[in-house]
Image (tube, rainbow, N blue to C red; front, side, top):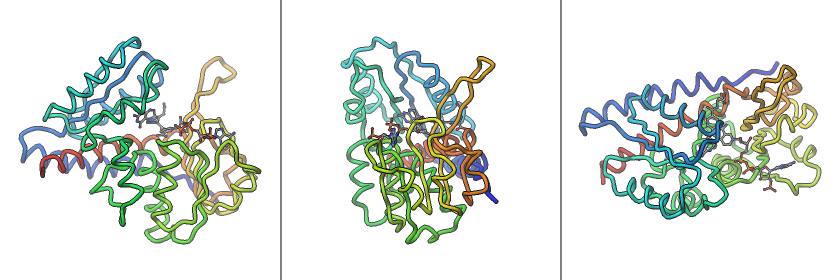
Length: 295
Ligand SMILES: NC(=O)C1=CN([C@@H]2O[C@H](COP(=O)(O)OP(=O)(O)OC[C@H]3O[C@@H](n4cnc5c(N)ncnc54)[C@H](OP(=O)(O)O)[C@@H]3O)[C@@H](O)[C@H]2O)C=CC1
Ligand SMILES: Nc1nc(=O)c2c([nH]1)NC[C@@H]1CN(c3ccc(C(=O)N[C@@H](CCC(=O)O)C(=O)O)cc3)C=[N+]21
């Protein structure tokens, strides 16, 4: 029997705890924690994500704001906008939605964000802390939201300590998902393999996994017979595919129907990791606000 890990339930719990903290922050500081999301251009999927982020922020007693810049905005104008948000004491969290248009360098923009306001956890200072800290503590550091949310679901589902000694395979090595995910699993005492487009015999590598994380961006690439019986599968993928009736639907990186009956647990798409990504972003915003208020 395969059980679904319900991202909606886990995310609602994270948001409920975050809301209590956000209200306490507002009571003692006379303002809500504030998250500013910068979006460049008109990419429809990006628009959908950022409106979810600001809507969920408001429901969580966080002042979520959207800054929309035209597709043609120049490097200096975007850097100036980031500098303005860095300098504004009322701004606790800054998120620059990725990917940016080709003429803009995403890493340059991440590097320009004040690390104390980097609620994505993408700044080299926060990445460095994640990779060197003796203990990984989501209250003390800004950890990338998708890996953090994935780890929280694993720990809450399996129990603390249950990851120790397990073989974890992360398919994908991006800075925003694969690499930090592998680091969090390592910190939880998994034996970690990172697979990517040059990995030889990927199905055989995946079959070694007690915990399999798919963060590839290829619709339903991970097949049922790549999954070790009883494995826990975290499907990070968000892929929009066309349907026969000319509409579209969202599928993950795992062939979920095939995984049913083989995996012990799997996260659905939608309603899995994506929901936790947004909840963890709000968590990070409150962590940033509290840390900045402490000085
Ligand atoms: N649920 C959520 O909250 C989020 C979901 N996503 C989704 O997660 C997925 C991954 O995102 P992201 O990490 O940003 O994507 P990237 O495109 O940055 O990285 C994809 C990774 O997958 C690897 N890869 C690509 N094709 C293959 C293949 N055929 N076999 C093995 N590995 C392969 C690439 O390898 P190489 O390095 O060799 O090129 C790369 O490391 C996407 O579907 C994205 O939409 C992303 C962020 C948040
Ligand atoms: N600086 C930056 N930080 C990010 O965290 C970031 C980003 N850029 N660029 C794009 C990716 C993608 N991402 C998602 C967020 C929420 C859902 C989400 O809520 N998904 C829902 C709904 C999916 C849908 O219906 O569209 C679900 O899976 O149930 C998905 C994906 C954050 N990202």
